[in-house]
Length: 270
Length: 270
Image (cartoon, rainbow over all chains, first blue to last red; front, side, top):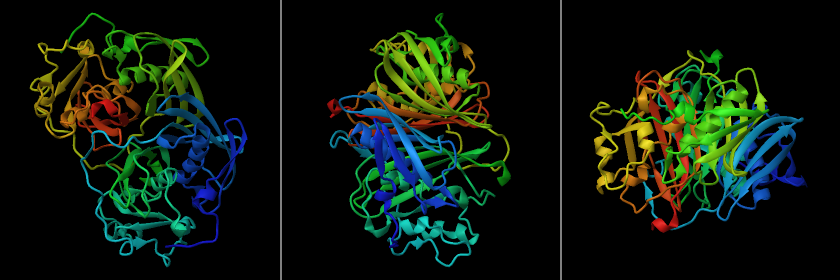
């Protein structure tokens, strides 16, 4: 489990109210890939501000990514659209330097245990956490600082892309944890949903970069303690766009989140 | 193919500009289920207004459903959040009687033919359009007027729920067309994404009503002429919520849309 002395997830996504529905926050250094904040991390900052405004946890969050997010100050402006008995819906925009960087629409509320239940798929099967593959320390590229803050352990069958041996299946499976055993709450599920290498990296196609256009996360449960079992896949890659969808299960086998995103496959990748 | 003398889809989703980014429209009678407008139809009205504002076709649309929508006048207020070289992002709220009924966030732009391509799944296999099952005329319940406006032809294996013989698989497969051979454009894909009976009706669980919280549609192509092949499924039903996701293919075998929604399973269904 990585340890580090920087701010943990909860502190790195903290928001300070500055006016009604307005929050100041910081896109922290070290939560980026190549200088651009991880999309799930950025979403988590905004969702924390939204959660403070509406006073309920997130159920379904959609974010549209407008600009890269370097480290630095940001602000989040939240507008409540409807606050009902069971659900509340709000929009928000996270801005940096006065420019809209991420814009969101989300509905908040609690799961309601009980009622009809049917799970058509089982949690993804994985080797144990310790038998799965951490980001290698000795790879040619410097290990991204983000990998000291989160602990992504890949299924060995899906990790070959790092050594130039993509599996040929557009899938990434593995474990997700926060460093220092920090608990994973509903907001950290946003980070989990965007923390794995893009499944297209296992396709063998010449794709090096897949900027997210839109990411939707459905929160389906409150995670029990422990790392999450995760599986992400791309099913349709064409015309400059790809889908990526995932499931996240907690240590008790409960599906706690589903994600789907639409991402660009830049033309330069041809 | 049903024929009717009412307004067609294009006219039933028409919007009239009344001010900068504001449109007047009508939720037409006959596009409802039990007096509440179909969610995909309602989304299509709002997306038409958004498309007029940003001047580009939709790529990814998320709608959050706030209130039932009876037939009657509505207005749509659109705000452009970012208009870039390739993509534009906008939010909108459709209101009825001054109350927010559907709120949306969407990104607009064109697919970019060419580039890396990989399709991990084939179009759903179906009997021919004529061999598939139209909504029965002689069922006990009156045929919804909506079924004169669209032509949904179910896979015979998935249609038994109507006669009290659910398949046990939470899946609905079939064909989608508009009445009178009206072409299916990017906006009509919103309707296709929400036109089939909920897959949970094939579960055998006592669920009679699944109001949509959130629906996201990714437009992956411009449909060639002809009916769409469609497949929808629910994979995780628990704690008062279910997912529903779908794919829509055109007559040439191209995936033209993907959808996912989060819906409520009302407690009364226990």
